[in-house]
Length: 499
Image 1 (cartoon, rainbow, N blue to C red):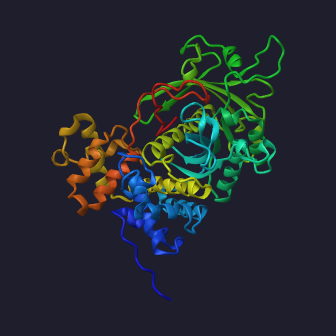
Image 2: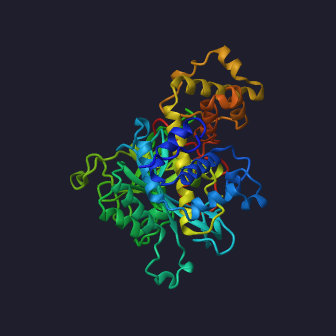
Image 3: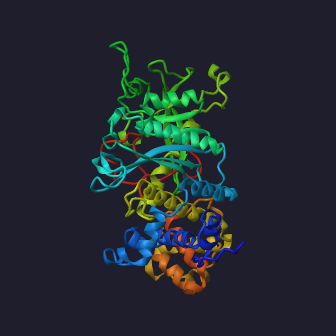
């Protein structure tokens, strides 16, 4: 048998990562294009990650050049399976102890949409797009993300085909709602033996009876948000919505909390906050019923919209008779807050795959090519975690100290100055997987340049990696559990230690 021709090496640890996928690509051109695509996706965000951008050529004239055409063929016509590549991506991630999923994490379900003009691109139609918060022409995908307090990454994704694109519309046998797609993705995660404490989702899924029934039928634990005004039939004098039920709870002050219990949350930047949680009884749901209804807020007196959650769960209360009827452990209020708090990681992942890796920048139209592009973006995102945890601790420490100083002192800070000051001083205050949250984008190039340019490929790769895993966060107000309406002016800090 003729030996395979080796492909051109990708820079730094990206070559070791890409080599894990080589047996999935039968010809040299595929292996070369896989590396070129990943390298282009990981480059700094100074231009869109279109085919011409990935190939490093001119946006218009360069579209006909050989590098862009090779990537076009790789995405659109080359014979390889996106699902097989995704399975390998997860296997490569799970070979690293720090990235392996465990039973205390969560399986987050969500969907995201982005603008796309015209109607010739697959899946494109007028529909609600979460990225802009309104109806416009674009493409929507449903995703599952695994997360704990330290790491988060996508598992599977599926495109949503609007009824308007199908011959028989809503009656077409191929039509699937987003909750139906989400249920299928959860089944994929189960088939891949992904452990999790609960399925977590926002109120679009929590308010959908079919989705909740699918989780009940599959005997899966969940913590789902509900809209504050999700109404039920009840006597005129009784509460009709979760918000009304919460307003009926007794509360005087933090010293006399009445029906409320304090819950301590610790956020990614290290600060602590006291939130308040309580059990609600509404519409057959209650503390000792099969389904519990929980309210969590920063202020029980006013129930602010941006920091109040109404949660539906089938995790029983400790000591409840329901503990004998389900196969999973009970959950106190503190754990329910922790579990739903992890949902905020999906918002952070969208910022990274879209803002840095070009999730919506694709320059292709077919269903196959779009789904392949999404899988390659997931591969690039996974590489960031994989490379970070494989990097020696001394180099990670040096990098993070440089990030601390660059954030505090600005452009004048140099790697030499940081080395002179000592590079291990901050090691004790960083938990496993806790990435610094204030890294200016400009310092990444200084870091790579200071490491002898292309000779030190690891330094260059770390600069690319940390642009994602050290992505900045701003503000402290968590996003409301609702989907529509104005967004908060600040980006939520995701919890990293305890909730």
